[in-house]
Length: 230
Image (cartoon, rainbow, N blue to C red; front, side):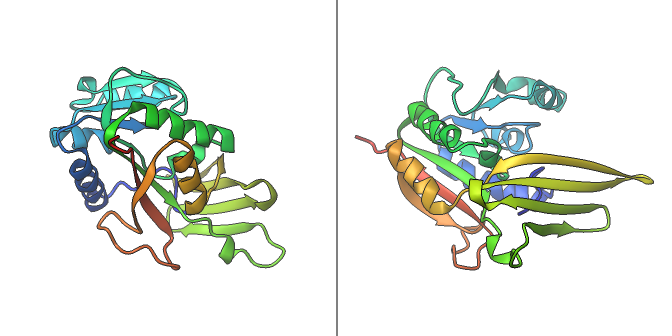
């Protein structure tokens, strides 16, 4: 899968914001896992009021240090259960962040929490990679997902428990830094079932922010579920 720190290129962020702003319309947006505000800040600059939820105070402090960061409301907490005031026309989770919830129960709870926050007709967007199980050699449990001059990434799969650990080796100056984190991967069909349990309906599914078709060869998907108007 792609690195979970998320893309930093301006074109990718611009496409993401264009997609989300179009769905938000004149309403408010709720970002689950707002982090340092890479999407929230440019989305707010487009005139969309954004409220974020994040468990990391350190990440939110970095958001606050950026221009416009102190104007975005953020609630500290677990985005699968944390409630905030008001309703929203859009809720979204990007950069594989749904996989930070490492149990199926937590992911199901996240959908239910989003459904409670959405206004009738509101939309829930998730961007997440397709598990690379087809690339696993027989008898192996690891896939290299990134090799560059300054970063090497390896996903170690626990297929029996639908989990993985992402290992990152990053060149920083003249040394190599190592980090890792646990995740729970999931399939589009499982996400659709979680949405159905929460009373949401699939509206769109694409392989990219420019609405490229989702096919058998897609490496990720952007899915949109809607809350019925009645």
